[in-house]
Length: 42
Length: 254
Image (cartoon, rainbow over all chains, first blue to last red; front, side, top):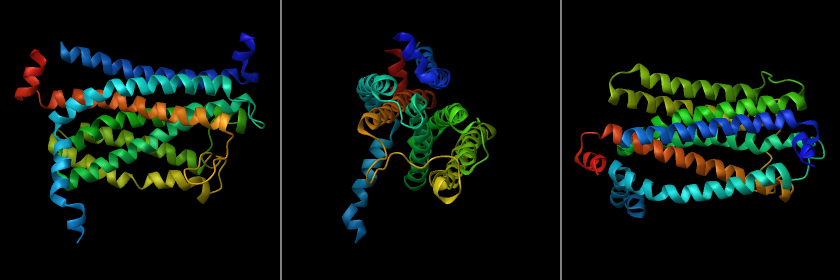
């Protein structure tokens, strides 16, 4: 069941890498901004 | 005649009030929690819809699900540039400081979304077209957009005089806007591998509701996410630029 979900009908590699890279970039943007915030407020 | 209708004086007051960094700083701070709530709820629904609720496409199977990150990223790459152009024009007409703060902070974000649109598009292209990249109209014009974003960032860095840098970047932003309609209409003007628009603002979208709703949610989620990061970075930039003014000093000490 779980394996079936992650396999994505054989497109798993493509889908998870596309979603993964997007998540990585968005998280990076958010965390770098929060980091700068904390540095300046101090 | 027109002056009477829009009431230029009130309009100018309105824009200067909103364009004043201090006023903006305050209201951006009050908007941020609401943007966070919107982004979290839209991402939750959007992701479940994208990866689970939406049925596989009849042609592309589960491979079509890349649309849920690709289209929002591409939408943002064009939307952010349009916002910057709008800010540049408003900045030139009403001479407000906030315009340049928007252009400066939005440019790297626009570049990252363009990067995402290109990369997720390449990953989608491999199983569907059999290649990561083709030099076709849509892909090439989107790549040019990335180069323009880099150019804007580099131009600002290259000019030491802040006022001059703001002016030059503003002009460059407006000139670079010609690429935006080219990207949008490229799939109709030229023969291309890239498919046409799936979502129609006017008229019927070419997608079943179970597929369309998560996509709209993801686009809105990306907009609010961009809003959060942009507002935070604009507030940081305001503090950096107004470091010596009284209200910022008082704020930092409190």
